[in-house]
Length: 158
Image (cartoon, rainbow, N blue to C red; front, side, top):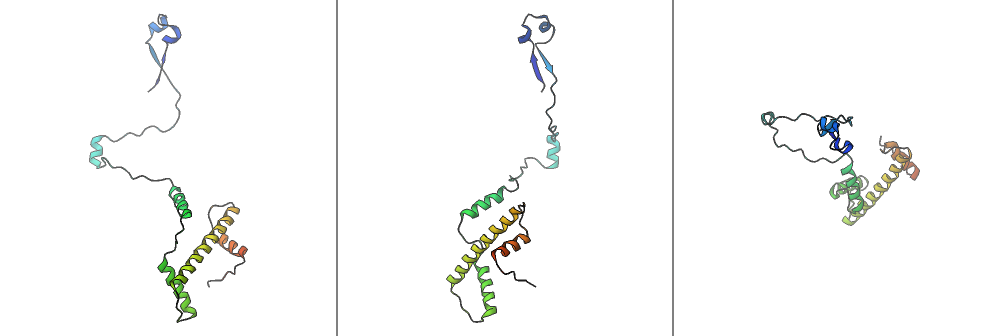
């Protein structure tokens, strides 16, 4: 709706300009920009299309859920790798060296704790390498650099 201007307060009630014109006058305002409202469907057209009362589910902005997950995992102390897949991997690697080696469950748990601590620390260094390169995305070359700076041997998988 257009903005109205009251001339009576400027000239007074008895002034001829106020008496000749209406008590209020509409003035044109410059547009503030933005989009014009879209025409909504009529109720008959909406009923025919079958979209009456459909509400879309709430969606968070990109990155909000990721930041929430980061905070959750930084607070927690539980293991992030599932126990059985890790145990199968350890047993497979051990079988390649010694066929009849037995392991206590506490030894596998200690290996898993140490492995996860190593991985978290390595990814911290990898993230620092990416930040140093003025990036937020880690790349394989960041992993190679972090391992090289740590003095680790890079084994080829060929």
